[in-house]
Length: 470
Image 1 (spheres, rainbow, N blue to C red):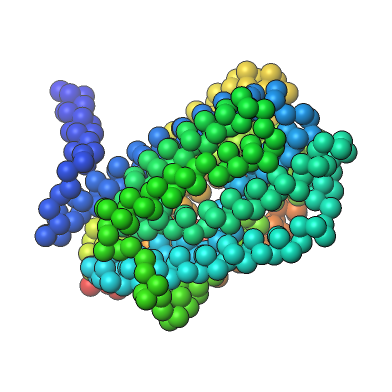
Image 2 (image 1 turned 60 degrees about the horizontal axis):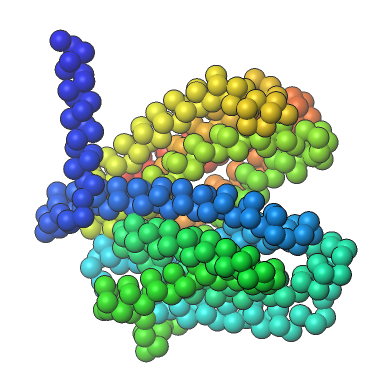
């Protein structure tokens, strides 16, 4: 009987969650209706994000053997380098995109659509200027720098293609800055599912472009345009349809540009930029430290299982990211109880999901790695345990970060992040020397828990208590 009741309760909970997966919006005239509508948009955005991720990874996997067989060894090396740069330059808009997102989400909570239009116009203005500056600087340096030396290519064919290929990369990268504003606006308006669906279209268009280039036997220059330029067509179409038909009242206008709003976006964006740089310094230096302390041969022993565990963080990020604008809108309306309840549920979900997945990977990881890399990597148990605990802690930290981002407490996050980075990097070196390869991940967990997670939880609890009147 007890088992039947638990099953009924479990299925009831699932049914309540599926209730939000629908295209028809809820009535937003009441606080309860707005809460349901937020949950609906969070659910749709998370699902669309997962679909976009699957399609993006799939198209990337399909393109690897195609380009590997089509390009020569050195040209393929340049292709891989530029493809990697595309993924790692997500913060190169100087944080302006996230600044626009935060402003739009807050103004949406106040129903200030005129303010949103000003923010959008100013966001386009800032990133257009930045994009033109990047293109102008590259054009000025183009004939002065031997670009092939950056890639360290030796053959004449590869050297001849280095400059044009990098030029295609810079042009597409710069154009992506202003064209990416529409996605930040959609996320800020809690319509991240629209952005994700257009990303799916961009991935497919990019793959088709690569196939056409290979079929026509075009150079690396055109392959880069296909990889990065074709998805920009989807971004342009997204902008035209969203601002031209769906939200015509939010379409950017020159007369809406305001120096004061531009300054506010830039200030918020600068803090996000610092956050992104500090995060990169904190979480992505492990391989460099291990190479310096223990030798390059030890790096794969750490990096391969780390990639396996990173899938946990990827899934959690897709689920948690839509909560950022939802928190902004809820807090702007003074609906703190919804924010408190949602944050708690987000933490519970993150803890449960990360614990289950980490346990499975600790137990089954050696077998998975045996088949994945043919036994080339045999990580120690302490490393696997360290990665498991880190993913649980990281999931909690990301849940808190979404709330702090959404409530515009960026300065607080910057201070904690800088302190965490200094302590973490120092500990990584010390513990790697003392305990070997597992030392770096334990150092990250210790530093992050003490200097980021615990203060964030205490600060958020105080923030919600003060505003909820308890």
